[in-house]
Image 1 (cartoon, helix red, strand yellow):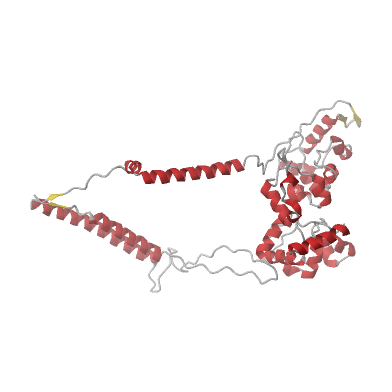
Image 2 (cartoon, rainbow, N blue to C red):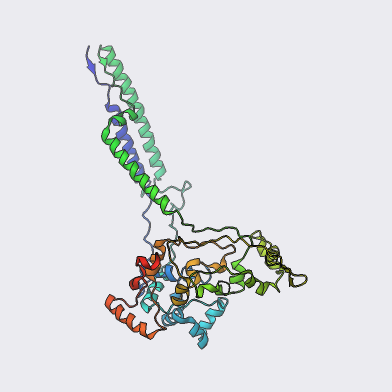
Length: 439
């Protein structure tokens, strides 16, 4: 008895038809190419460089399209003269004191908030920042429809909708599949009628058994598994000790938003050691009592604001009184005190050396540079990652301040010529040496 193959080509034909249909679907359902994004207006600066400078110097207080501590800055170059912006950014305090009308208007319109001065930024740096802020706001992609079609589908030049064509192709494919099944059954019956035995396909191994027998695939899979495991293990270990966003609940609720924001209390009034010492001290409760001897209750509107955060500020003031032993009725100290177990938020490893006075008093770094917009925080949290890479990037981007010392200014001028830069950064002055930050 003769043996013939059982039309293995059927599966191949079916696969080919499926590929043909999928190709047709992709062709007819292809959307129109999106229009090119509008180019940013031509400026004298480099927007890519400006973005890095903006993130390093401006992003703590400003956003492009949202009012933060300061106003939104998108399109600021179109509102003011560039020469004025040079002077404003480098030393806005001097402009305000001089009575410049534009400077006074900006100062008053923004609640008379003092803006940090940036004398270390050159005109070229400011041009780059302005180029970044002058970029148009990205628009959402526009979806093009057929205008009058009820089904929302596109249409060809002849007016036939894509949905009709896709439906026709699906119908044709279905008919071909049915015909192939019928032909296969007819050929099988004819072969049996003529005494021809139809050879059946050999039973294939299960995919997992075939995989186990293939040593090459096993080796490749093992290598890929090890690589992925090492990648995720590295990512996990790199997050150990990184507490960005840490926001613990303190024993006495202290609102930086009210004290530093609404009342404008300077950070260094409470954290006075930051100017002269390595550590920024936790203020003693006596500093709190300088004001709260007289402020024992807050206004109703402030209490209403506290309800948004689930805080009763009068109760928190009473906790302060209990801790220092103050009797507000008699305006005297009782002598009965209670310790306040504050929860530390910012904590560097023991092998890292960081001196607050060197950064605050010598380098002139604002508190918000590392701690974020504390004047907006109801509950204090760790704003920055405080990782080694974060510190190194700051050293690479921060220029050294020498304007207060003529001796060092001359030396730095010569070094700037040597390195071929306009101003020296902390990194170029040894800010990347291991011994600067590690014991």
